[in-house]
Amino acid sequence: MIYYHYTSEPHLELIQESGIIKTTDSNVSGTEEHVGPDVVWLFKEPLRGTTPRMLITHVDLKFATLYLDKSKMEIQVDIPAHEVRRADKFFKKLDADPKWISHLESSGQSKNKKWYVIERDIPKSEWVDITVRPEASDVLKEHNTGKVQRIGHVEGTYVFSNQ
Image 1 (cartoon, one colour):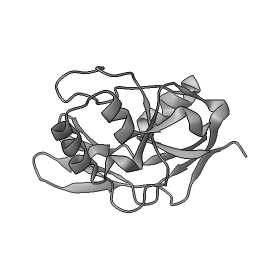
Image 2: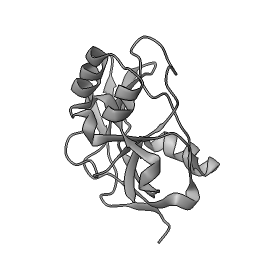
Image 3: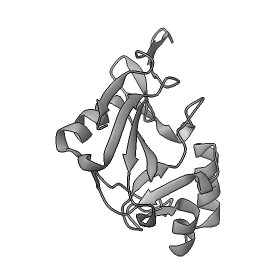
């Protein structure tokens, strides 16, 4: 079944070099890392529109702040549906704090019923396509002047196709 994984442009380079989308913290706890099993985060539907806040990372540079869009690169994967779980069911099974889940939903700007997880790495053999998400861009904001520069892309660019 087709699912979508999102990452930043710099992180995509690491994924392509290793040939693996590696698991990461499942965010089961708001106070401790790696409380639950590590997972790869997925969506069943492609993201459209504004990037959710939870997918923007702030990187402090010497003269500016880079707002790195972790949804800029869309990796379409084809994996067995029986291995994937809806995040709300995953969180419930692990007794995640409902207040913490509400916080995640707020920063993710969506309900966790739209999020999915798989508890294993995803090798390149299961990738279908990698494209640049048209709505996504990184933003650089200078500290001294406050000047904002969008770092864009060529819309619909295909980076990889396994078809």
